[in-house]
Length: 233
Image (cartoon, rainbow, N blue to C red; front, top):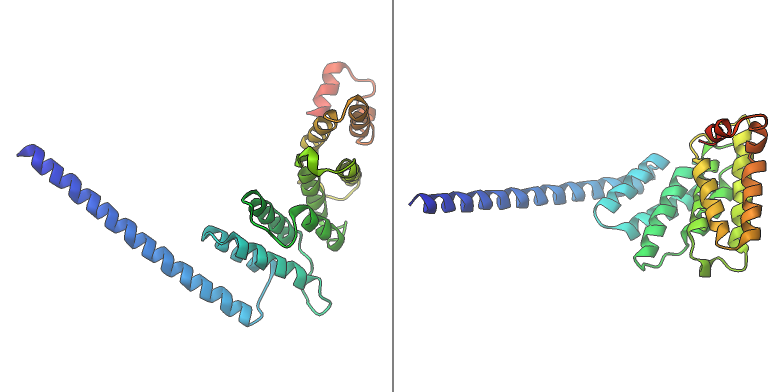
């Protein structure tokens, strides 16, 4: 009898848990419907800002609508470049757009424009003095360094990657704070590793770019080996 009562209690607990789960799903669905209506109302009233666009994109992602999120970000980026708008191009919108486009590409979903092209467009629209420009350069560099060898063309991606790295190294030596959030050591390491796949000469050129154009070699002059390693960390 005791075992039967225990089984009944377990069945009752499972039934209550299932009921709570269904109630939670209903609440989430209602919340999603409400937020959808709210975003559409704001769009109809032409109320928009980069922050609102990013929030809406994240909401669409959370409800499994990545393609819609990509379209929202694409439209926002296009609108910011129109002469009649008061909104300036925002690097965060482009970065999120590229991130979602990259995710869609991995799932085989076609988009109007790929992540690399998005970032190139962003670099034309967002001025160098903007703090987001360095982040865009770094993200594009990261994308190029991670492309499969059969997608890089005849040195095209390697040449572009070198130009981007030099741009970031130059920004890092300027008085601007725009490159503070960029992990340059990690990008330099990725750059050298990628160059090593193209042979000894490419590796030498990569080391030359990283060591001398970054100012690392000059900063280590007169130091011991241990001190020099400390500078690079």
